[in-house]
Image (tube, rainbow, N blue to C red; front, side):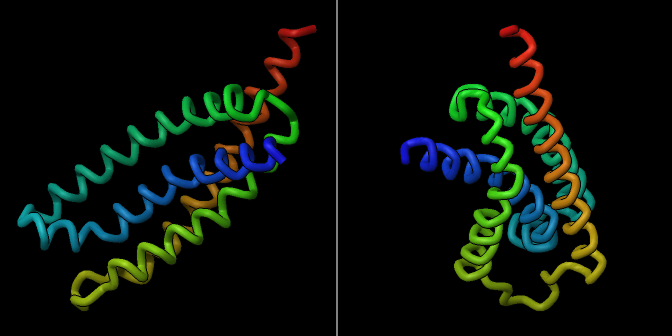
Amino acid sequence: MKYLIKLNLASIILALPVFAAIELIGNALRISRITGWEYGKVERTVTLINIAGFLLTGFLIVYVTRRILDNRRIALITSLLWFAYFSLFVYLFAALFPMTVHEDKPTPVTGLIFIGILILHFLYLAIVQACSIFLTVREDD
């Protein structure tokens, strides 16, 4: 039971970076309107934050896999479990901060970008976790 809680906690932690990246991209127009910054400045800032977040997520994945999940092979299940928590976060964010200004809505092609980000996050998560788990197993032999 204790390990099941750890799996869910790890899934929550691994869902947060992709949630933050997608919400920043989707709300760039809203951020621009609220802060008064030019849209180009907001777009560059969001891009830099997302690149830094992508690089730091790799370290986060290894840390979570080794420290919280004890480098067990069952930890690979978090490659799928994070999506449920991601969906919950998106629903809660949309419920708490609804789009009230029509101009803040992102373009329709943004949804395709989001799908690509989700697929890449899944692959990145699975590959980094597998490498972390199986390279550590070889070190123990």
